[in-house]
Length: 400
Image (cartoon, rainbow, N blue to C red; front, side):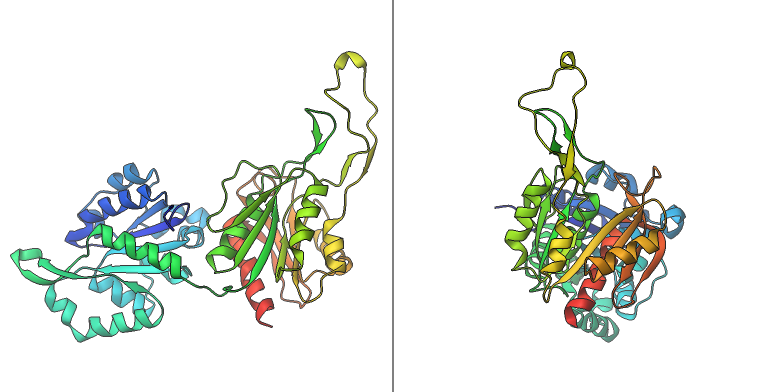
C-alpha cells in the first residue's frame, strides 16, 4: 500500500541541535515514501550539517535565508507549495517561536504562513525539556493541532543521559504519515469538482484543434482543495502532469467528453472550479484516417463546442461556481460580463499573451472578481498562491 506521503510536498525544517545529523536519514526515509522534500534550515542548523547534504538527498536546494529569493517572496512561496511540514530536530527555541508567532528567520516565517499539518520532534537537554516554559509552549502548540513526536530518553550532549533525545527518524516519518492520513481541514466534508487542461478536438486521426493550456492551474486548485480536506474530483483534458495526491482524476480528450464527465458528477458537488481551457470550436466533421498533403488543402468547417460553464450556471442551485477567463484586453469589463451572464460566484480573469504568465507558465497575471464584491485586484501570482486564494474564497462561500 502506498504511503500517505506519496506525492505529497513535505517541508522539512531543521534547527540547530546535535540531532540535526539525523535529519539526513529522515529526508531519505521521506523520499523512500515517494514524498517531495523541501529542506529549510536555520542558520544554527548549518553549523551541524551542510545544506549540500540535503540537496543531494532531496534533489532540491536547501534554503536558509529569508532574502535568498526576494523576487518571489521565498517564505510565502515555500509555505504555499508545501502540503505538510515537519521540524526535526525542534529545539526549545523553535517551539517558543512557533507558540508565540515569532517570525524572525526563513523557517519561522514559512511556518507562520503555512496552513497544513505540522509535526515537531523536540530535541534538547533534560533541563530545557522539563522547564515549565517549554511545557506551556507545547501545550499551546498541541492545542492548535500540531503533532508532537518524542522526545525519548537516551544519551544527550555533554555526555549526559536523560529525557530530551530526538525520536528516531522512522518514528517521526510514521507520525507524519498519521498526521496526513488523519488530518482534517477547513474544507472537510465538501465535495469539489475541478476541471483542468485543454481539450483536443480531432481534425483527423493525428491532428486536432486545441490550445496551449498545460493544466497547471486546475491541478494546483485540486491539490490545494484536497490539502484542506475536501473530497476532490479532477476532470482533466490532455496533460502530462501527475495526479495530485488524494485527488480522483478522470482524463478526457474532447469538450464533449469533458461535458459528460462534469455533468455526471455535478449533482453531488458542493462547488465547481472550472479552470479548463475548453476549445471554443471543433471541426464539424472528423476525417477518417490521416489527411494527406497530396490531397490538397482541406476545407475545415468549424462549429461551437458545448458551453459547459453556461450550462452549469443554468443548473447551479446551491452550488458555488468558479469560472476562468483568458483575456488580452478590457479584462475587468469582460470578466464582469462573464460573471453576470454565466451566474458565477467567482471568476479568475487571466491576462494572456506574455511569455511568463498564463498558459504553460508557472505564474499568472490575474484578478479575481466576485459576485459578492470580495474582489482581488490584478497582480502577478504563482499558481500555488492563486489556488490558495481561490480556496480561501471557497471556504468563505461554503460557510455562508
